[in-house]
Length: 85
Image 1: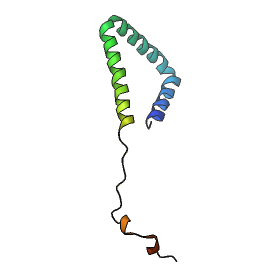
Image 2 (image 1 turned 90 degrees about the vertical axis):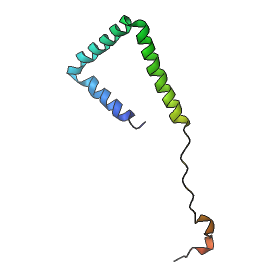
Image 3 (image 1 turned 180 degrees about the vertical axis):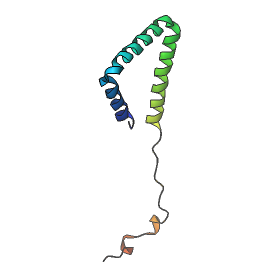
Image 4 (image 1 turned 45 degrees about the vertical axis):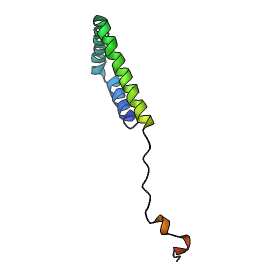
Protein backbone atom coordinates (compact mmCIF):
# COMPACT_ATOMS: atom_id res chain seq x y z
CA UNK A 1 0.00 0.00 0.00
CA UNK A 2 2.97 2.29 0.45
CA UNK A 3 3.79 2.47 -3.22
CA UNK A 4 0.20 2.70 -4.47
CA UNK A 5 0.20 6.50 -4.32
CA UNK A 6 3.54 6.66 -6.07
CA UNK A 7 2.31 4.32 -8.80
CA UNK A 8 -0.88 6.33 -9.29
CA UNK A 9 1.09 9.56 -9.49
CA UNK A 10 3.36 8.03 -12.10
CA UNK A 11 0.37 6.85 -14.11
CA UNK A 12 -1.17 10.32 -14.00
CA UNK A 13 2.04 11.91 -15.27
CA UNK A 14 2.35 9.23 -17.92
CA UNK A 15 -1.25 9.76 -19.03
CA UNK A 16 -1.21 13.55 -19.22
CA UNK A 17 2.13 13.91 -20.99
CA UNK A 18 1.46 14.67 -24.64
CA UNK A 19 4.62 12.99 -25.87
CA UNK A 20 3.96 9.79 -23.96
CA UNK A 21 0.52 9.19 -25.48
CA UNK A 22 2.00 7.92 -28.73
CA UNK A 23 4.62 5.79 -27.00
CA UNK A 24 2.04 4.41 -24.58
CA UNK A 25 -0.22 3.34 -27.43
CA UNK A 26 2.75 1.91 -29.31
CA UNK A 27 3.72 -0.12 -26.25
CA UNK A 28 0.20 -1.48 -25.87
CA UNK A 29 0.12 -2.38 -29.57
CA UNK A 30 3.53 -4.07 -29.34
CA UNK A 31 2.34 -6.09 -26.33
CA UNK A 32 -0.84 -7.14 -28.15
CA UNK A 33 1.15 -8.28 -31.19
CA UNK A 34 3.63 -10.17 -28.97
CA UNK A 35 0.79 -11.97 -27.17
CA UNK A 36 -0.77 -12.99 -30.48
CA UNK A 37 2.55 -14.05 -32.04
CA UNK A 38 3.76 -16.19 -29.17
CA UNK A 39 0.36 -17.41 -28.08
CA UNK A 40 1.11 -20.42 -25.85
CA UNK A 41 4.27 -18.97 -24.35
CA UNK A 42 2.74 -15.55 -23.72
CA UNK A 43 -0.24 -17.05 -21.90
CA UNK A 44 2.10 -19.03 -19.66
CA UNK A 45 4.16 -15.91 -18.93
CA UNK A 46 1.04 -13.91 -18.08
CA UNK A 47 -0.29 -16.70 -15.83
CA UNK A 48 3.03 -16.99 -14.00
CA UNK A 49 3.14 -13.21 -13.45
CA UNK A 50 -0.43 -13.05 -12.16
CA UNK A 51 -0.24 -16.12 -9.93
CA UNK A 52 3.14 -15.20 -8.48
CA UNK A 53 1.86 -11.76 -7.49
CA UNK A 54 -1.29 -13.27 -5.96
CA UNK A 55 0.79 -15.88 -4.14
CA UNK A 56 3.13 -13.23 -2.71
CA UNK A 57 0.13 -11.14 -1.66
CA UNK A 58 -1.32 -14.16 0.14
CA UNK A 59 1.99 -14.74 1.94
CA UNK A 60 2.18 -11.09 3.00
CA UNK A 61 -1.43 -11.04 4.26
CA UNK A 62 -1.06 -14.24 6.28
CA UNK A 63 2.34 -13.45 7.76
CA UNK A 64 2.19 -13.47 11.58
CA UNK A 65 2.01 -10.09 13.23
CA UNK A 66 5.06 -8.90 15.13
CA UNK A 67 4.63 -9.09 18.87
CA UNK A 68 6.15 -6.44 21.02
CA UNK A 69 8.63 -7.84 23.53
CA UNK A 70 7.45 -7.96 27.12
CA UNK A 71 8.96 -5.57 29.62
CA UNK A 72 10.94 -7.81 31.99
CA UNK A 73 10.36 -5.45 34.91
CA UNK A 74 6.59 -5.19 34.42
CA UNK A 75 5.84 -8.07 36.79
CA UNK A 76 7.77 -6.35 39.60
CA UNK A 77 5.97 -3.01 39.33
CA UNK A 78 2.88 -2.28 41.38
CA UNK A 79 0.47 0.65 41.06
CA UNK A 80 1.23 1.79 44.61
CA UNK A 81 4.93 2.17 43.68
CA UNK A 82 4.20 5.19 41.46
CA UNK A 83 5.12 8.49 43.07
CA UNK A 84 2.61 11.30 42.59
CA UNK A 85 3.61 14.96 42.50
